[in-house]
Image (cartoon, rainbow, N blue to C red; front, side):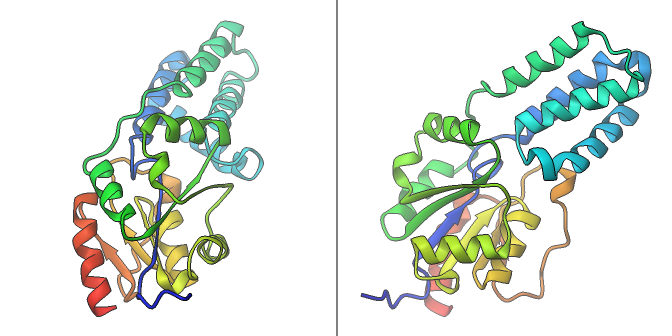
Length: 238
């Protein structure tokens, strides 16, 4: 039986929406720059690393493993092939540490997901390395609150249309909540859903785009604690 409500399904991003993530990349990047300090300033090394990450996204995808490989590639380039095995070992160790970092839930994450799970179909929609995302979800203790989990290679309008049709009543009756305008908000709105932006103080530069402020289904909230009230307003007014 078709649900007559205006909103029936809510998608949540994971990294930097439900728990901390980008801070571990930033800390590792500083550690990487320190390893190569004899070959350039931190800003220059970070810029070269970003270039490698941009080139490699289509090959390695999103996540820690691709980031680690981009660090190795950058080290080889900056040192003109003279990087020592010790430095390579340090980079690999840094990547392994990232893959084991503990989960740090963001404010209001658990209480909000628990509250909404009682009335809506919840779908976790995240991109990145499969094993790492599964590990973080298991350690977060939030897994049982979601009706479905989708770990995707990238997020596009077609991705959201497919997921919200599979797990809900289509994108028009769905909402995506996340910290990235580029991945979580804009493509969800393009698919016909609501796109809710929850800014995080650290957002990867490759995820930056202009907010779609003219779109009627775009909203920004300061933290997840505001989400239930926003959903109540949408349910009443559409």
